[in-house]
Length: 323
Image (cartoon, rainbow, N blue to C red; front, side, top):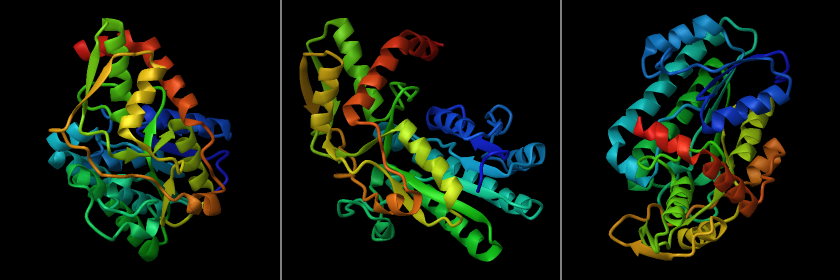
């Protein structure tokens, strides 16, 4: 698909990943990008999805909107996270199928999640491992909802010929991330913890778990580039990993963030809290082969840019929370 001149709709386009995808689209000559807002189109409701397609008639849909959070938020909201993510996908894909029958060319691109992988998937995770077990229990409802949407896209591709793509980014980070203390993921949560402790002159911070679990992280702009590239070259929703192939333990991550944010206090661990999935690290050879895509932002460089952004926006973030 040549994106120039296409009318593109990006759910979640005002969010963390979405704003970067929108910028990449504009860089590729897309002049008409629609970013629906929840106050106008609450996509967990079918009628909102119907109105969205009727109002905008897109050539291409990027479905990036999600209800998601870290381990604590997943534990607190398993029902909501399953329902909201499943309902949005069902409504948008079905209405996309109906719309595709009226359009000369239509494509649906969706961001999945590596939370869909089985809990004890061998490292590095290969796309062929997706069905070899149940996801890690704390985020299973979210992961299963996203994986079910992939199955729906596959069924619609085989039965109706609907063009689509499905990519699975590893844990994202970068400027404009969610730094809310109740729902943030590990990197923004740790950045906020370290910066706040430094500014308050605290002598220690407390982190969840044992620090033994490992994770892989992808800078948000690299992810956006991979997703837009998938729209250009893919027509079927076979899952494709997006990552860096670099694994780091949470313990080492905390120490690195503490160093980069200039917090020199003690790091204490609370083993009564869960570690989550033991390891996460992706095999990205399929992305290199099918998308000609590789991550380009170094991890320390990405962390510095994220820390700087948070420091510049900390007061506004805290003010928004207080309201």
